[in-house]
Image (cartoon, rainbow, N blue to C red):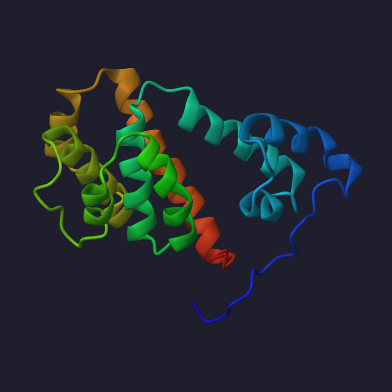
Length: 175
């Protein structure tokens, strides 16, 4: 990145009455208005929709927490979103992801430390993030492990966190 500052002003919670509702939902779901949400609050509708979508992805799907966090960490690595990576390491640890696996998602290729299903989901994450198009052969392998609901949820997790990381990188949210 060529600049070292966030490219939009931070919205201090409680300073814009028209945002009270969305700030309340963020507080209720997350317990705080994080740096990311202080950026997003520059647009109330975006902050509101973002909070609802990411709450669904993180807390309302059947994707096991460890797989979800591996996807998120991998997306952060591939997109150069250090802020996102650092923010999710504690969630990954809480979900039972080992330090070895947390470090392994930083590798250019996928080391042998991952279980077969973890590797499969990380291959999906890599394809969606690097090439966008998911090869038919990879999708067929995923369909052997996930029903339609599970597949949509795994794909939506990788897609949503690509959105997160790309916003963070574009707006230079790095600390």
